[in-house]
Image 1 (cartoon, one colour):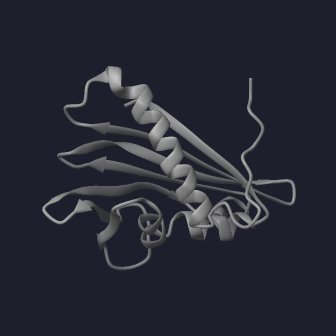
Image 2: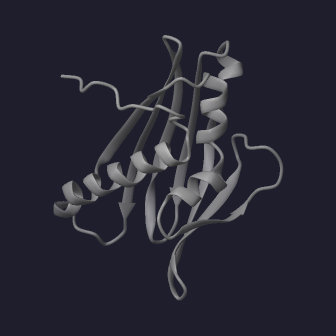
Image 3: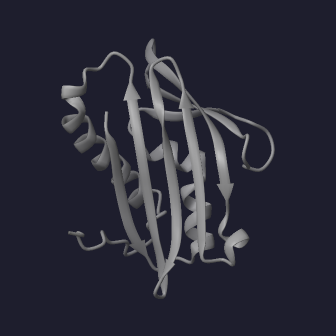
Length: 157
């Protein structure tokens, strides 16, 4: 699958948008048929590992991930935060980069991800990308990482 991008602008502060977008349990609850199966003890930081479980009953798989970059907004003067997660499962590989950035009186929340389902031919990428943008856009909105009144930013181009 190719790389997809989802953005929302919210009235939340960068710190609050960060807290919401990096709450793995909340994010899992917003993605259909997915739950947080395990997470390393302690606060999230570079090196934290967690596993999402996707599917129903015996038709499910684990999606293990590791946080490889953790820069909360307070480390950047409260204006920007970046979290990068690498996927290392047998069913799905890839990465995700979640950012929050102060914008006007609010925050721009951006989710960029490459999902690589093993064994799926590349000609399926456009269909998978469209589905992923829809699912993860909804996850941002429902998980309120986009906050109340979240909106898509104007198209660039």
